[in-house]
Length: 192
Image 1 (tube, helix red, strand yellow):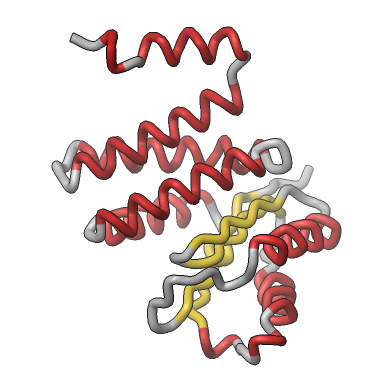
Image 2: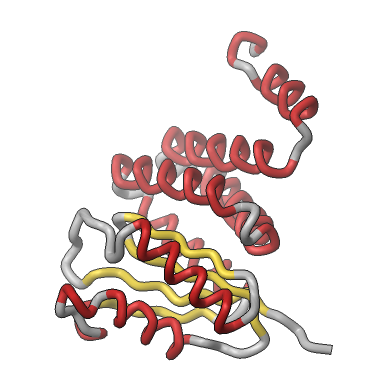
């Protein structure tokens, strides 16, 4: 029996630029190409912070992903030298990197806020295409946010993202009746 591990190939620009590495349309094309090529779930998160390609596969596919992205970037005359590229090949590596990444990102509250909004919007859009990946990421991110929340680091920023993440999870995984019940239970008006 084959064991599929959650993996990540992450691109970020050298020299921070407040722009997407590839367009939204190109990200959709990339995702579909990778799904067809690797025959597995693929989730592409495309934000101003970088481009993350999550996939569940038994073997790493870093070279395929890099080549596909470079083809999309050919018109911009960009090469692999223009980016920091990281590869993570297990859930344990992903958990460790998430801790470091969130810890660094929350030092910039406005950037973190914009990133979290974009991330949650994309998770909502692509949940049905990659439900296993999104569920795994929800669990990892929620655990990490709760852990960081206990360390008093920019608590207001973390709580906002955690709330957005949980709301996204409820929207995607619960029946409408249960969604309404949860929303009313968590409504600000009902708090003491």
